[in-house]
Length: 249
Ligand SMILES: C=CC(=O)SCCNC(=O)CCNC(=O)[C@H](O)C(C)(C)COP(=O)(O)OP(=O)(O)OC[C@H]1O[C@@H](n2cnc3c(N)ncnc32)[C@H](O)[C@@H]1OP(=O)(O)O
Image (cartoon, rainbow, N blue to C red; front, top):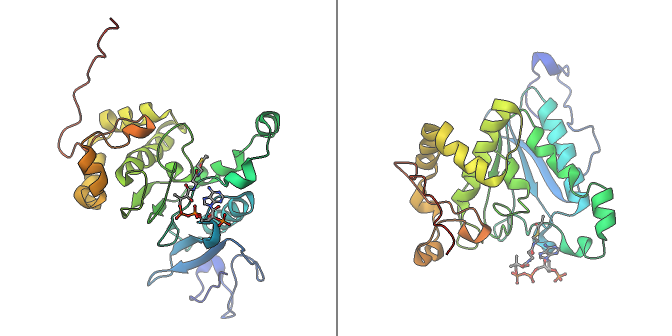
């Protein structure tokens, strides 16, 4: 759980008595939540459900929202990092929990609506990804990572190319700043290429394109993320020329 061991800030004076944030006694079953860094100003949320490869069950996502609330309100926290374990960032939605739910339940009950909290945090949220992260980056069912700002790190075990997530994620930040909307995947990708090319280049150079590009993807010699329908390539220097689809025969 999370303890506060740094000196008081004016906004949070505790008269030298250690303060626990979130409120003392808050225990997380599925997360390790702590503040890190020399200035203790980075809120770190580590997914901690190893037996299920950090699959995102309701309990985990509720705790995630709680932790995000705490960090967003904490004036000492400048940025939030969400990370997993070495083997898995997260195995996506908890499919065991989902398997018996009917369409009506999901649709009527706003299934997964509480997953959006991370996209509303008004501080940078960085997803530090290692290991398995199926369906976390691309496709119809974009999950948590797509609502974060930057996805860093890479791993051969990551099933989706890491950089793909970076583009979508950073772009969401951009679009949130611009108009508060999360656009469709292709719009996001297009817009970052047209509206924020320098930001994109900066991000790519920051992350090191080559190191984020898995050997497996290299061998396939195809656009990153094409499996998920995104069709994204690494364009370290120039955005792609817009191609017109060939007419149907
Ligand atoms: C919003 C929509 C989505 O996110 S849909 C995407 C849902 N995710 C998936 O479909 C991934 C499913 N998992 C896998 O394909 C594999 O687990 C793997 C490739 C990620 C890893 O394979 P590995 O062989 O290394 O591990 P296990 O398959 O043995 O898994 C260990 C343990 O974790 C449980 N588990 C894994 N993924 C999930 C999940 N998404 N939901 C619930 N539980 C999951 C798995 O059942 C094993 O537990 P056990 O008690 O031994 O059955």
